[in-house]
Image 1: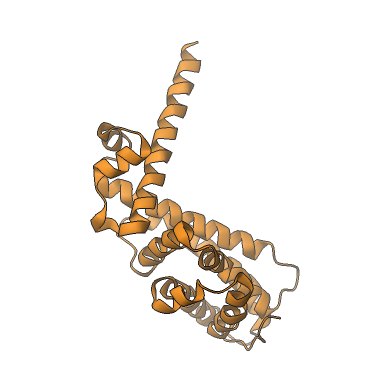
Image 2: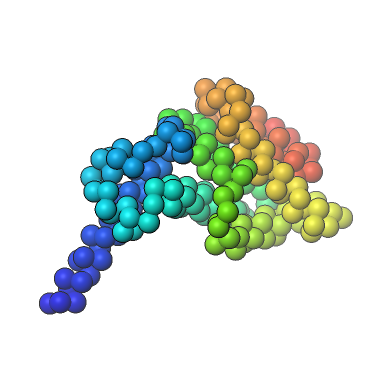
Length: 211
């Protein structure tokens, strides 16, 4: 019986932690880190202030954890798209898979795009102490290299990594720049038609427009 009670307490604690993270990310997406207060987060999550101290230690640690979680989800989505490619994907296929999580956010707009903008900010300027994600970044790059290499023969691995980082930076900038807001007014198909050749170009290839 005591084991069951312990499990229930652990599950309740995890729900509280997850709720605080989700509330923090929603508010961060709306206002940025400087505009978020501890009381707003706890009110939205239906938790008390002590829960933040217990689960995270501080407001800053909670915000960092929420953004880190969102960035990890973004990387997971990108890797899932790359893994779904066929045996011999074209450069255009690779560019589409690489950009699809961002294109989905641009097409959806609203909170999805706001969250992606938050992720993009930290992708451009990662806070200290996020070394835990280095392995996931490396894995994502390896997946890109695996499908890029056959499409761009004669280009070394170091150069391909550089191009991949440039393509990622382009997507981050796009989420934050005015042109990203312009793209968000278009249909998903139009966003893909305009953006995929640009990402393919960043990789160093010459992809024809989609459609």
